[in-house]
Image (cartoon, rainbow, N blue to C red; front, top):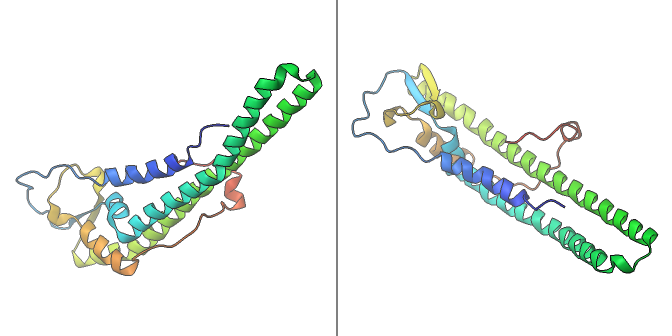
Length: 201
């Protein structure tokens, strides 16, 4: 059975999101405010909003639960493999072959379960991020109109800017009011999606 990486996978995705929210040191002279040009930083909102932080905390809990579910399988397989190795020489060839096949079958089943749980965690995270995106969309539309924006840029594509053009902080404040938290459990991947290779988020 491959190493139990589900918890690390979920945590790494969330940590990367939080790390990407760290902004470069602002210049002493940020330059002029360009009328009609606004900037929004989605990664920062996901990392710093109340809902985004709730998702991160809950995903870590779910990953730990999954790891707790899978660990007994790994322990049992390792024990069986060690016992088989220790007693293999004293077993008749047919019994040895049967036990090896049974062990291989259980290992494949455990690996399939691990893959299923990993896909469920990825899907659950994607659905919660989608919920945040849907909640913040009307907020951004309102801010776009209030600030007189003629162009809204993704902060990921902007190296430096005058912070007065950044809508993110206001978007976070309004999202915290509109969507103060998210409560959810691990979600099963819909049948039509589980038949497709899981895409990394």
